[in-house]
Length: 251
Ligand code: 13P
Image 1: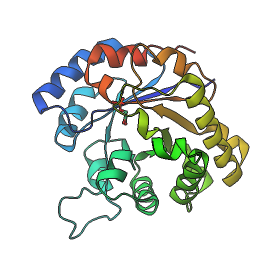
Image 2: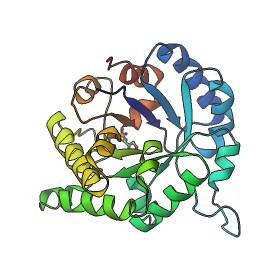
Image 3: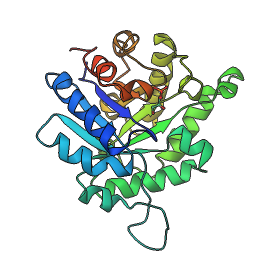
């Protein structure tokens, strides 16, 4: 099995002073892990995070970026701006952006492409709603999100991409997918990538689970063969909890 990639998605939380405190607490707690540790922070915390994580094993990510390099796009941030700021990862297509900000599979693809061109590593989110799952459409939805969201992504670019399977019904609800539900959905996603690219590429692709993952359920989720890591919301806001997730898995 691969080492895991554990990313915290702080969402719209943490003032700079709070970010500083959280990062300082986190650093010693995760320093011995062989897993990859990422914190995806609000734009206003990026400079603080880059400065405080320098020389540590923690990578910094943003939570979105635009698909254009520059121009009249008030309120947007270009991938090159993130890159210059020392950011290495960027979350793309989170369900909250799809739900509240009109994100589509086409804009996900545009943002992912631009992020890759700027030298960032996209964490591309996919996942079905409860209604879609209950009406038997889970696989159809995931397959559409993958085929459209990766339509023009080349095989060699997948090495720089992390996929996050986040069932919308498990995000921020305290309802975690069972180990088997998460495993089955991610194995299905991997089979779609194998059809689009090839089996070896799909096997090497990192696919995380996200949705109420925390210090109590991380060990068993991360023990499932297809789950290559976690995208952690609420539990990433507390250093001890996030560190427990990071340290839950040892190869
Ligand atoms: P929670 O861990 O708070 O459910 O959030 C998951 C998520 O959306 C991470 O991107």
